[in-house]
Image 1: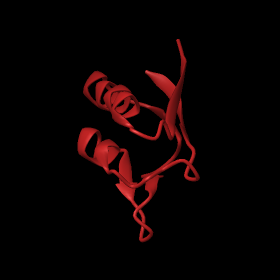
Image 2: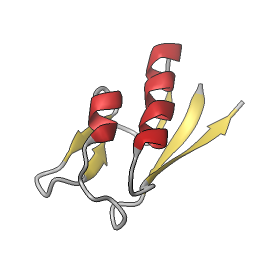
Image 3: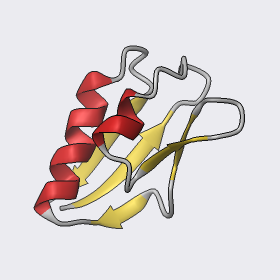
Image 4: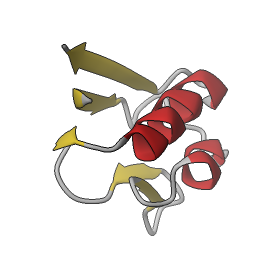
Length: 70
């Protein structure tokens, strides 16, 4: 998967569901809000890609989105 993770930190409520779903991609900052670990444009394997999609679906504030290419 080649995708761009988009994070709207102003919408984030710090629920942490993204961190639980894809800890290799998401983390909580010192303020408790989501941050992406590494680059927001990433090519990943299937397991990580599924975790990212799951995190986007789980986000209660809809602070995450994913723009997939191909």
